Image 1 (cartoon, rainbow over the protein chains, first blue to last red):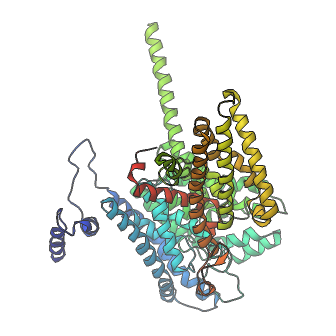
Image 2 (cartoon, rainbow over the protein chains, first blue to last red; image 1 turned 180 degrees about the horizontal axis):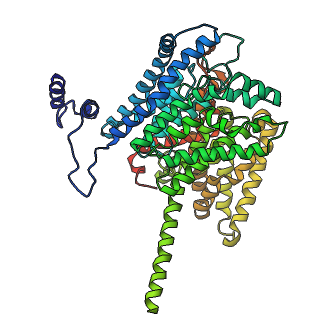
Image 3 (cartoon, chains in turn orange, purple; image 1 turned 90 degrees about the vertical axis):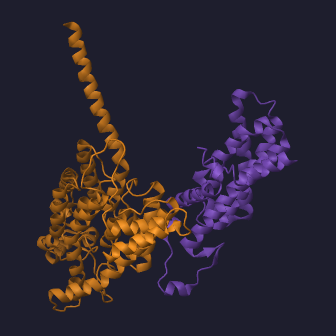
Length: 394
Length: 206
């Protein structure tokens, strides 16, 4: 218990009244990060439960592991594959780790620093909220994103996505998606196109994602050629270029199962989102013409391509920014899936509509909840009035 | 005298039309991509607002209350047309950049707000100073916002290159979001945030 002893010694130095008291919040954060705090609620009605913020955040981090590990491997795989080299699992994984680690370290340092500064200013404890955001940001950007952009995006997202609204738990938008939106609109060259998705891409070779290629297709022959290059199995298992964590639908589904099992993510939101996306894709299939072959892409492929699965499983279900009522979750998820495919297919400027669709629905989540709750109140009121009326007659 | 100087200086900070009264946001989003148009816009608004204030103040006892908005609009519109013609004649490039936003000074909420709130009830000299002060307060915000938008969005200030080309060679890039209107809104929000952090008396107001 040397560490415990050391922390206690430090803590005595930052007690109220001492000259180092301004560092209290930082030390408190370090303490709760290393040890489970033994403070309990003493006043008011409350439910005692083992699930606190730290437990929830840890569950999400564990759920992120399958796509994360696959993503790291895939960085190496895509890199060596495009160079035409045969490599084994560990070579791929090692190369991916070298590429991925700096991004995640920068993301945690930049965002974490902002969190600590704000905690100091507000004299609050640093919350665990950034644990997930800091990991999500590297997973939804291309592998070649320059590190200073990652840092800038993490800082922007933490300040304007979270702290201005009052910190963890008060944000309207998903902070990690806000970081991606910031990068997407600030530095579009690094967030789309055909040069950024594969690490160490040789000049003159296109490394476009299947989604990017499909959105560029103008004839049915081109569409078929892309399908010949990327099979549906490739898309499902994730052997395709793309943002680091988004490629493997299988790994994401494993993570989704964990999220649903622990109750952190809502299966209703996820299922509704996939239904909504599938419905929109199917609708577009019906109206597809030979001149716009992109609309003819089968709807199940939209589930597998781009960030759809990742966004709908990990970002849309964010317990803070998503809808909370049970009916609201269905509406919220369905519309998010619908909008994602609508933007993706019909707006050529945004080949990936998932980010914009989720941010848009984040904004509408409180409204949906409000309408659902009001609907309940009205229905119950009618019921009560009916009963009252019957009583009077008797 | 102290009262007059207060009329002139209060809108600069504690009663700023943009950050405290939250007026005139729309034009602050549209024309602050570069500094030059922003300054020209601020000067145009200053001309229109100060003279409209004086004219309305002179007429304040003769305008029937029921048609005062129409009278105000006619006066403001006449002044805006003057400004527009002047810009077209002498600053054609900037006039093209500002495009419709010169004409839209007519609908700038700051102008109608000051005419209604101040000029209709005060003598010409205080009204003139009120116009100058409020337009200056508006101008300060435009300059601050456009400074950051031009610096980070285009790497220039007042059209001169500030961020050296060697920085671009080392991987620096202009921030595309700064060119887009949402960033102007975020910048104004940040200014409000900092201002209220420094001047605590603003925090109670809403």
